Image (cartoon, helix red, strand yellow):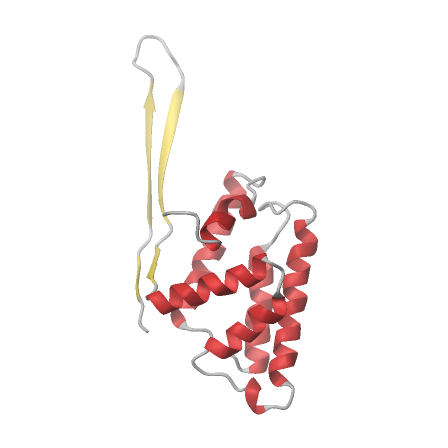
Length: 171
């Protein structure tokens, strides 16, 4: 599978006032270019959707197994119990995610960047390679998490993501 990606960064502001009849209200429109564009091949889309579905359904062991099974390179299957250890680690991270979710799965509560960092550390320890296309998704998620938290820390991620993960949402 292949992916294409390009990076550029720009943002611009356009400020305007009302119709000029004495109104002092000013409005600002901000155009933001996060600078990361990734196109996933069908199989990569399927892998990402399956992984997110396992996470949302609180099946960390399945998420870990999927990561190993679909990695282009992994060495944990070469170590006795390696896949189980990796899957157990992912299961603990997913459980932490769902424990925080009980407080409300908002950008103000859940630190996706921290959870993704734990997953990446686990991948490094167990030798599970992350596909470059997925790395771009991780980077995009980190950028958007910070932007989203600044704009609306009460945004509930599950409410937004679930229809897409379960296949009922359309882009």
